[in-house]
Length: 143
Image (tube, helix red, strand yellow):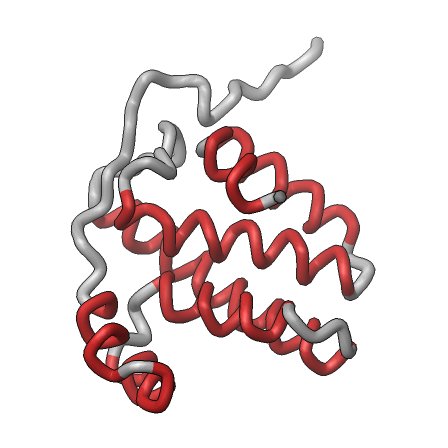
């Protein structure tokens, strides 16, 4: 007997997250106060994505590991937020809806960081999850 697994993203459901409260804090704090704004909003996928992306600018192993940790945190915080907003493990997370971008950016950064530390299966899984969630996010981020 052969078991098949359904494509969890093969649905017409679109998930649109509410506005991220960290956005205003980040804007108000500016570059000098970013870490304090991030610490004030650890639930925000966006702050973790931004931290990961900053680390990805440097290809040193220490930076790649930090990016991996930041991105994984943002990814899991995003999954929590998606679930609290009705996501049941399926549905598109459109890039065009700006509040979704923190999660999608964390997912992209996790894929890149995983590749840098040699975790190929995680890199591929995250890249596919990003494409399945939002092809336009994949195109925008993978440039």
